[in-house]
Image (cartoon, rainbow, N blue to C red; front, side):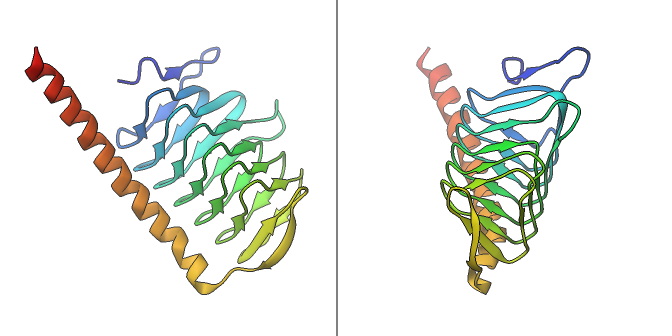
Length: 185
């Protein structure tokens, strides 16, 4: 099921835990390591060609996201229980545990999004910018706009749990479709 999704770069192959869900259209190239119970959704591209990409446990990378690195300078590190919204671009940055990157947001080289912080949808985090713990960054270019509420920070864990459930239901749906297809023949 992964032969059309995983590709080497030179002599380096992606290392994907067996529990990781890779949706249709995903392309993962080179030095990419994805830990347990994470998910990569439809048409996402992860390029570990000129540096490495590391994705932690129970992290979800949503549809049409682009993850890349900077040649010999900035890898891409994504922590545990991170939610990366649809069509996000993460380039040579560090995303710590229990964070949310909003839909269509961009995080650039050397930037750090610290634990339990949030990047708003459509925001652009400029190179080397730090989003401190417990803060919301928004705008183009992004600025720190406010503190996150306790409820917002609790949502990070819930988002990781939801995506585990979405993965389970998607796999069940795909298996049902396969069974139905076989029964029709």
